[in-house]
Length: 591
Ligand code: FES
Ligand code: MG
Image (cartoon, rainbow, N blue to C red; front, top):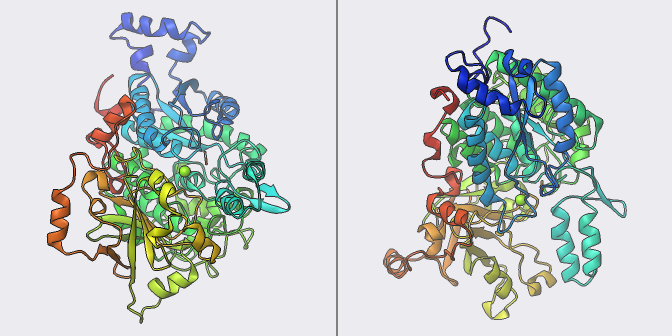
């Protein structure tokens, strides 16, 4: 131990000279599986490994294997390991949505890190919500923490073509609807994308959030993109275990790394990778738990002008293994740094070095996959943040809008055209599936599909349902996408032109509660406005007629009800009311 080593908080449990009786009581049970007094009392940092891998969580299950290498790294650096079970969150398995459990896993990990003798923690991240849940917890507790990505699955292949997680589902649905494949063919095609251990191999929410955990500085450089099955993943696990011990000695905490500057860097990186529209929800949440001010205006102001560099599905063609071989996050950051586009090169990262020191000399190694900064996939590829009488804030991912739509409504500065269309309103995904092919709705290319009752309170947790397909009769005419808008979310693996995460949601009194099928909707992407062209007296009358808890079905579990009562809108990160009032708790209180 160096002179600078702070007194370890674990020693309040295991070696407290003021309270030898309690020390004995804490110690005796942790000795019972073979830990020694030397391991617990000689000043070795106790490193928690927040374990998100389990049989319930296939995306993160490989962490069980990787944790062996993390342990080796911790022990080689002079620490002791205590593995921490984390409430499971599997994106594809949890009903009604894994998003509901992000805050539950957060709360539970906060209590664990706060209430047990943990000096530092390795965050086993991967599947969509595991990354924000764990970073949020580390933010609140504020003990030294480092994230370890489980890594993406190997590339999926079907008849010589790459098949990417999630993205292939949208394609398979079209083939099924057109009668080109049957149910077995659907399963065969879709599961061809799931090749190995690891998380989704597209630039969905998982790759996005793992990349952003690195861009925030919370992973070792290069960690995010290594495929789960590669040997380098085990080697990175070992290095991560070694590093967290030193971070405890140096007292390098989440508040030192995840500063406002780090979030600004992450927003820019999100545009360059073509990240998911779930990212603003999660990063705004992590920031709130740190006391860092961050909102959807920041996403537009800092992110919109940034070019898209990463050619991964759904915005592009390639997959996770290709991203890794092209240089991963360090290559993206290196390209941005080279052009002066990373706002804070001096931001400190988990290895104690700055972004510029880690990535300054890195460049793309495969220019088809990570484009050089001078030849991007798309210029101005970040999100825009809309508002109007339909909502206060909603996000649009401009990198997936079709070229015609972009040229007509967004890019041409001389042409003041705004999109105007007729609203077709659906109350939740079941209503959409029931009625979308109903020809009496008269849906044509001048319509906008609206989904409500799909937000944090309405669903609950927010459903990934705002990517609505046109009716079959329009698909047959070659119209593959209509503008969509809603208070729900969209899977990061889909690519439809949608206005998402509308806040406040219909169930929380947002303007979407008032819109009716047939209303005229006006969207001006350059002014960033979205309005229903309905006069105020009529809107007031519609509001007065709303029931008590509009668009809110009965809760099915205690947590759903507590969540509904406490949750804040997507624009505020979907955090729980009151939860951000608790910050830096490991340091304010003596356990
Ligand atoms: Fe787990 Fe995509 S479903 S990462
Ligand atoms: Mg998802």
